[in-house]
Length: 138
Ligand SMILES: Nc1nc2c([nH]c(=O)n2[C@@H]2O[C@H](COP(=O)(O)OP(=O)(O)OP(=O)(O)O)[C@@H](O)[C@H]2O)c(=O)[nH]1
Ligand SMILES: [Mg+2]
View 1 (cartoon, rainbow, N blue to C red):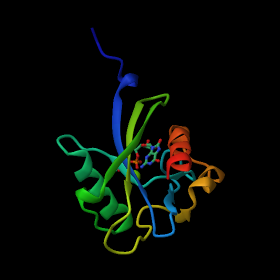
View 2: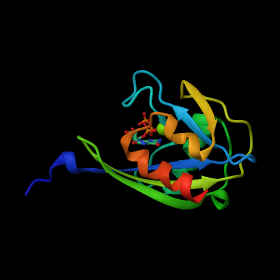
View 3: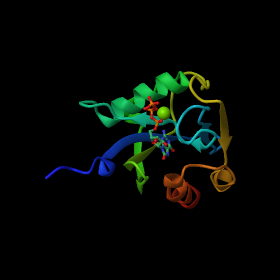
View 4: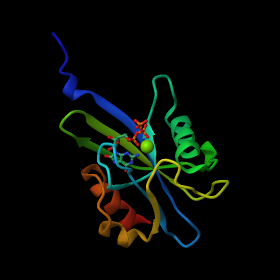
């Protein structure tokens, strides 16, 4: 029996960084990438053999230039979403402490947004339930 490659599950870790005013950081995906122009939570794919928290710490360094420690990452909710070509499994962590100032190293823009305003920003379909949880629980 051969597995259907379209059913592959991709593990992506993402974070809602929350500032002292309770706003959440979202980042705009650059042109040339899948889902370009949509806003997303910073993060990325977990590499083979990599721990999820280590992957997120690496992605935050690469994408935003900040340092986060694993103890500051709180598991929150996750997305499980069927895209046409893969299944996305994406835990979303909360983080209120980091070192450094965020800079858009790989995104075209950054925005600090109140949870109730997140719905005004176009995001990938997988993110809709996450936005609802942030709005209701933060
Ligand atoms: N980081 C992130 N990825 C998301 C979100 N929602 C969502 O559907 N995804 C999907 O998760 C997948 C992996 O995300 P990514 O493009 O950030 O991966 P990455 O940082 O490792 O980038 P790369 O593969 O170009 O090196 C993409 O297909 C992306 O569309 C989200 O809120 N944040
Ligand atoms: Mg990424």
